[in-house]
Length: 406
Ligand SMILES: Nc1ncnc2c1ncn2[C@@H]1O[C@H](COP(=O)(O)OP(=O)(O)OP(=O)(O)O)[C@@H](O)[C@H]1O
Ligand SMILES: [Mg+2]
Image 1 (spheres, helix red, strand yellow):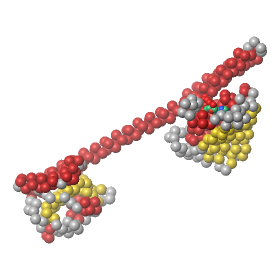
Image 2 (cartoon, rainbow, N blue to C red):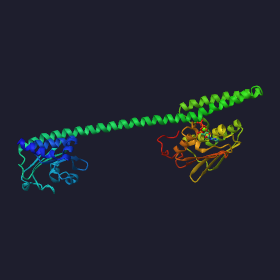
Image 3 (cartoon, helix red, strand yellow):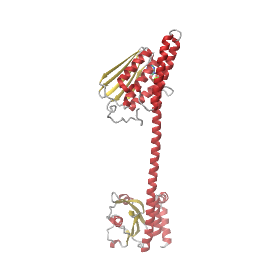
Image 4 (cartoon, rainbow, N blue to C red):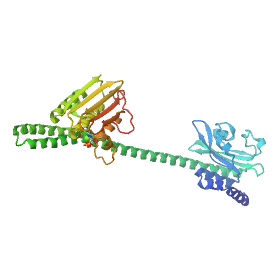
């Protein structure tokens, strides 16, 4: 080959800024193609990859070809020069275009001489390397063909390496995905345990302080009653320990083993007895079967709303009303206490978790929660959930958060 001619061609190619940019930032295949053009003195060329499923070739790297041709070239196996080489695995050295056994593709009539070489990897055709010289330049020789075959072998190695690199990258991405899923699952679990501890163990422990304070007051006035209360407290403390153990074992509240309604009846009666607040429970409509986690979430919601009544409301009455109608289950806990400014709930400084937990639980069940209150107006906590997702046969609902209710 005449090296001054090669240098000239290289210089001409480098004259175009865009081309230069592509050559330096291009893929390994692009760089190989550019080197192949330089080495064989070709004026244009492409590397095409075979999609075995579609039985078609497409351009992976190109130089000196019309962009439109590059974009649209999707020759079938067996059709056109490249398709024929990919189908037969035979290299083609085409000289006189008029003497070609296969017609030139449209838009390629100016090509004077072509090398079309199969790119093989592990006995399979991976694609083809096309090298062309314009009509005015010297035709490719047998020597060019041999050089081209060496370059096609290098292309094969590059393609395989690129595929391995892609697989490696995909594997890395997958590991990263798993890692994030693991972190999320751990966070969900922490949130769930925090919620369980808050709604269950912490509530009971807070109750104990409150009952112990009452005992202290009664100590001198009514010692027999204090003894009775202390016996009851000891029993409650045992049951709290049992409940904590159950949280550790990921169990649902034992009280719910009898079903949601009996559990609520027992809880509301006990609440009234302990607090002196006239608490009532009413259930209207059907009593559909609910998934265990739905039952325990509803129980926790009502438990937190009642605990707020006890802690904050100074109420005389509280009504718990559950209504099933129109495919929804609605829970309302309404007290006639002091009420409060609901803006308290959206304040970042608010340290309470209870109402936020009620909201979370309702959302996790695909429903919503509303707190209606004003100072001096009592408080109403309303929660609505769709029943279709709550029945035991239904798949778990897909709320905004990734975690599932427990
Ligand atoms: N029934 C109610 N009557 C009056 N005020 C209430 C009532 N429910 C909630 N509040 C007010 O809303 C605030 C937020 O309630 P939330 O349950 O979120 O937190 P908390 O009860 O203070 O603490 P935590 O529930 O985390 O132990 C309460 O501090 C209280 O001021
Ligand atoms: Mg609370």
